Image 1 (cartoon, rainbow, N blue to C red):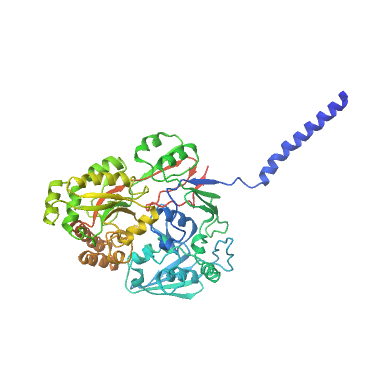
Image 2 (cartoon, rainbow, N blue to C red):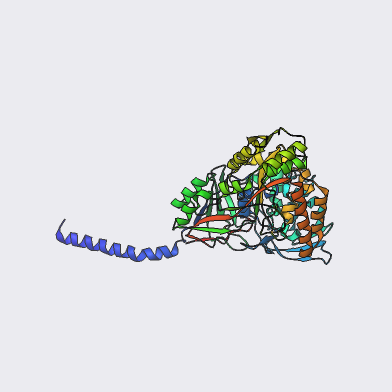
Length: 542
């Protein structure tokens, strides 16, 4: 190659490189902005994708992304705001709620189904009737145990749910219900597509609406591998505007230490339920912020009050005095919890501050057991959750401490556990004698604790009242409080109900846990929910 040719070739290369350099910014400007991905290290797999039969926060964290309700809670708060209902009116007697529905709301689609219409009143009626009417073809699909719907007495409360027109629904109650609107913002009232339901019923696979879910929410499930991963993509047609996060991933990571390791490496961006022992190290990480606030929760040991010897209040009180609560909170919760006195947390309005806890007194416990006919104690089971919960960081360890305390008063307790979904189902069926569980509030109302967890409706139908506690003096107060609208009057009734709870001792109240959320600093505008939920609509990434 001659020198002249080399110079010409070099010139062409220089010109080509210059053109490429000039073209690159233009190409980048025309190309779409890189998709934003957020990874949430979830503590477990959902029970399914149908919120009407679920009661765990693990499942609700998933369905929260998929479905909308008629109304919802403001992000990070307890105020009820419009959602699929643009507005509503309530009659003077509190018996009729008329909802004007939002128009133009699109349902998601998948390989099974492409919707032909927008959301309308038929979908609202389907949500109610699927849980309410036993002759509805979907009543028994996935499960006939619509726990929340039954626990809150909805079957007796509802008189009618009527379609006034395509975008108007009127709900008539049999009696006033103070927390009714807040209840409709809870997960059980997430709205599914009736059109999708009809199509799957015709295809002979009705269960698909709960396995391949379609809602109107901000995210849609695109992949689910049990105990491994859930992939969501942002719903481009979401009525409130497309989410800022394009790809949302739930990396299912049951071990809290592994969740923390992933957060450190940037393999996940938000993690729930850190180990209390890891907190010092987490707080020292410059890439992580630990968000915290008092938890609206309660962890407890429920006595099955329908089974001997726990049908005797003296036995229940004796065991309450036999277990060293302060030692448990100190050893397991460390700085992340406070000993529980009442069945509702201190931050819940109507909390009875005047009540005192049962004192740790093994000698008095022995005397009570002897008076109840058990001078030499007895043998029982003691169920412990297999997973970490927002109200209980280590149920197995707590069970071991309880077991040791009970042995000192002659009570032999065998620790039992099952897979999480099976555990909850068996507890609700009342298979246990003693079992640990807990609760995080759903709507900011005391009814959500005192009625849902301790009311007679919830005890009789495999609901969340796992103590199977149905005590009429308590029940009368809680039911009266539901129909009273004045908060001061309701407070007095709930305070009296808490006195009866302490006297009857259906639970050994363990602790209220502080809500702690380690979040990487590249996450923008994540808010703590008072209900312990994880909502990613509105969240962004730097």
